[in-house]
Image (tube, rainbow, N blue to C red):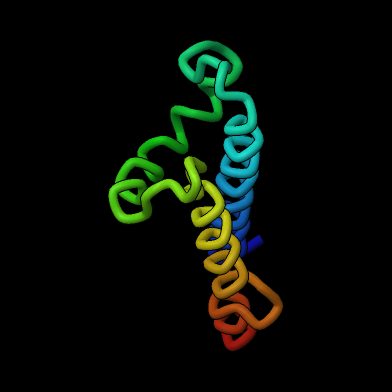
Length: 97
């Protein structure tokens, strides 16, 4: 495994983990009584909240529903595909090398 392969693997794993956390965060919004500062829910809330706070200033809730986690899932999925997908930039660059 080359250094580039390791970097791509770590990047893919990190993006996949963040997508998973945001999807779990979407599910948690269905249960407003859940305290996000208690285990195990804080393991999902703490890594995602720094991403959600600035986006909430730009995108208000629609019908009382916070859609910012959905937006982040879309952004991260797109980024993962553009960088690491079958025709992704990093994938194509690794084939040239």
